[in-house]
Image (cartoon, rainbow, N blue to C red; front, top):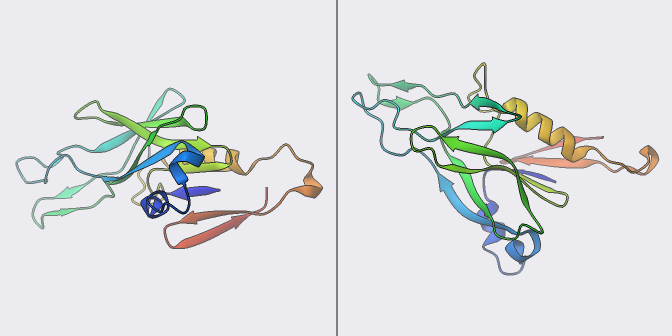
Length: 164
């Protein structure tokens, strides 16, 4: 199962699911821009650089100072790995202004978490490539083709189905 960005905190915060103990992943909520953008500081920084296979994939960002509008999706669903025996960071994301890193793709068994919606505000060297590769990997299976099952990906309010 692949989960993208939103509402993980609702599952993680519900004691009935025992999410953190079962997956080793702790949801910390959303993280966005370092500061409010302005004409004097049009790019205040955010987690914008996905580090995948020794390449940097930069999230699209544009600020319109005339209208005071950010044309981007600077938020990530911030998580941490609290049990390395159950979960691991597959791909990190970095904040270019502060050099802070955070998990971008996390795996716990057959559960994968992607910290944002990689198909929103796509640019030419954007992070959607690494997300697509990870999602394809998550649906791959070593079981015989005859016994494979459908997988479902949840992207915000939409479900996507694929057959590996």
